[in-house]
Length: 225
Image 1 (cartoon, one colour):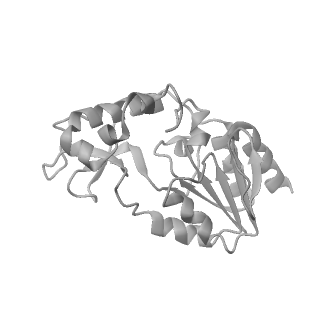
Image 2: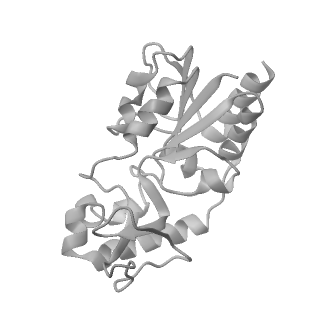
């Protein structure tokens, strides 16, 4: 069985109603990054940061996986499928996908603010000041903030190196270190990029279009071809 590695970004979830970082009119436009998505912001105003992620969680719980998320699962009928995602939503999981690696953490989880290994599921929408881990420290969203290391990169690189086919969906490939995964695709016979704003890249099959249209089409070709 060949290995397919799918690398997804915000574009695949945008069609489920989750605004991307660069969208106008979305949550991100109402807040400054430095106020809600950095360790320093959490030290300065933890309540603001927690409220921002509560809003994102509410938005997520009102959203559903779309046909792009769902159709990817058919690839496992013919290939060993791994999904690496920059997204902190759980739409891949809710679509039925397995073998998912979240590079930037999970919105529906919290962790200790002083011990990264203490991780807890969040039931419902809200994480509040005064919600503590078992050791008594404040809980924070289990996400990678700007300026923090990306501990799952080593695992992501290892998975990418084994790819026979590497598919990128819904990302501009401008966010590092995640975008550097392309540097580890030497074994891939095909590299395919699907994105509304995709730009030509050497050695990459570029498909400019919506994930909900182009992903099912690609999956059909790969499974039936």
